[in-house]
Length: 308
Image (cartoon, rainbow, N blue to C red; front, top):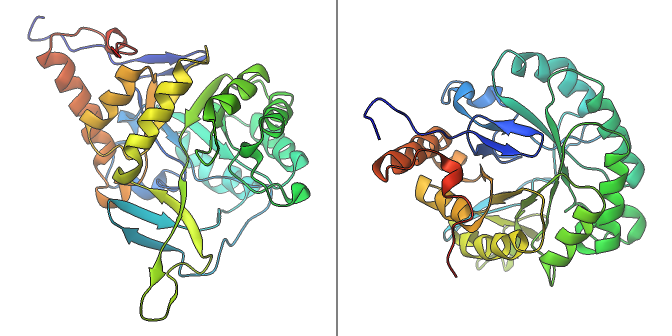
């Protein structure tokens, strides 16, 4: 490779075209503006904003976040400003950047998912929707939408019916066989699948003999879950034909490259943003360096090259 030739790092996830495969993970990067002082937002492949609901949510009462060995537990409870305030106050700021904006959405009923999708699809500046199906289905006894393949498929179809944007379905790992859910949402029309969301965990305070989190349980994220995430991504890419986004414990370019080699077309950086606000840019640069050192001209040459 000539010294002045930079490797190509653009990736296509179907209709969603990214300048590079590094995305932020919902809930760890605010609405983008919060990190603008640390990160060149234009350098990212995509910004996935904090999950949006139909109406504003306060989330769970504290304590709702704590550090654990190799990661963190959170039970924030999907606190957010609501879709209307996002469109009015946050989206105009994001529109000034040359980066794909992905709105993560959720609801407690099918109708809420549909309404949020419909509202976001009618505005300029949103390039895709990521559907969080790890939420409790209030009309089904609180069971997560993502734990039952039929329910997961129904949510996917409900959102697809309301939008012309690419639909990413984000899977929960808290199931017996994640490939069954992946195949169900693909059949229902998912354009892209992202995984994994957090693993359910908890922690006990020895002094009080009470849970550290007010919600008792929370979502475990960070480096501790990377081996589980890698395994699940590997399983899913073998079972579906739509593009897959890898998520879970990615701290460095090396971590990201593992997911890409397994077959993920892109990755999302989450908990690392709390530890190192420059993490996303460092991963982008690290991927470029890896390609250059190994004389690889295009990142797509390494995607899916895993040899079991």
